[in-house]
Amino acid sequence: ADLDDYIVALPKAELHLHIEGTLEPELIFELAQRNKVSLPYDSVQSLRDAYAFTDLQSFLNLYYAGASVLITEQDFYDMTMAYLKRAHADGVCHTEIMFDPQTHTERGVAIETVFAGIAGAVRDMQRDTGLSSYLIMSFLRHLSEASAFETLEAALPLREAYDDVWVAIGLDSAEVGNPPEKFARVFQRCKDLGFRLVAHAGEEGPAQYVSDALDVLHVERIDHGVRSEEDPALMQRLIDEQIPLTVCPLSNLKLCVVDDMAEHNLARFLRQGVLVTINADDPAYFGGYVADNYRAVAKSLKLSRSELAQLADNSIVASFLPIGRKAALR
Ligand code: HPA
Ligand code: ZN
Image 1 (tube, protein in one colour):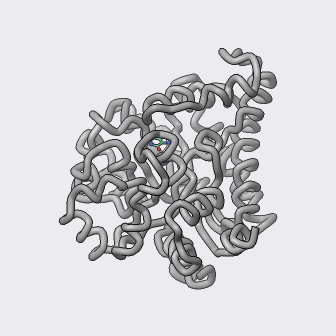
Image 2: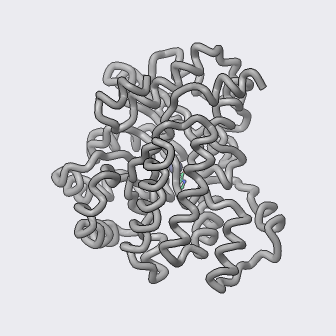
């Protein structure tokens, strides 16, 4: 309990969080009922029991099915507000939230509805508690480059209305076989438009995808990146250039990226001087929110309190906040 209090009290940012991955089974059922969407599960428990994953794709199938209950602006608001309250309880002072418009527009939900619901909750939470959030609009990499461009063009008319929160572009979904190169042109366009850039790389994909995310997509931060360890030159570059990695320990365990938390390379990365951070990824599916992730690695990797504090401080440093606000939070 003492360690729990220490972890919650650390000022920290959460930088790798998919808002659709915060939909708890209870809320999935509530929204299904509200919207008269039928689910192939007869109870909250039977849905939860299905959360036994063997790899990223086995999770993504359920994640997209779960998101199918999101229809109205209120649904997106309720989902986001539930996450923000949970993050606030964990001592998170800033979040950078990924969302996948294509998961919703493909089902006929307007992109305006998605932005309004998520940003509405983010703004209300900031007003009421001071917890700040930025939004990272992410492209689904299993879909085409053309679909990513269409999504960007559909979102751009909203940029001005959401310029207080929408600051970045990301890349997620099935990694292997969908390399960074596939999105080189759309990321170049986003860069030219002045967005901050991140991409998932080196979760299931090879270290080469991490190098290519840096060199071809020009991202500033890597989501996951745990397979970078397979390339010593890349590791040295991550250290030299202090390129942040947003690591998600419980996610890695649930998706069998690591077999045992005691073997997670997070501690080695940290001790070598890589700018690693701890995040929840999809907390409703992976068995824990951000403080649970800190707790899991503290225990399994025997991290000291000063190492936990370093990880929390890294999250502020690696955020897209202006330097003045970073300084105030550290
Ligand atoms: N990896 C790739 N795509 C995702 C993830 C992830 O961990 N979570 C949600 N979409
Ligand atoms: Zn992720």
